[in-house]
Amino acid sequence: MIKETTLTQTYSSVGQTIRGAIKQIKKRELAFSLDAKIAANSS
Image (cartoon, rainbow, N blue to C red; front, side, top):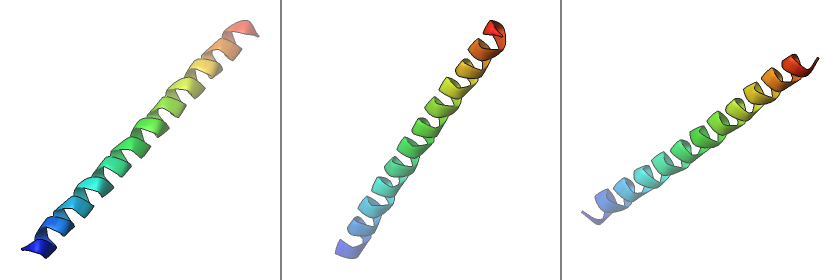
């Protein structure tokens, strides 16, 4: 019983970490594409 709860907690924390990493990657991709558009427009 105790092992199951710790496993669930571990899985949920890993899921949160992965979700956070995906959010960071998406933010970077958005910023990069915006920078690329600005650079293309200015040149």
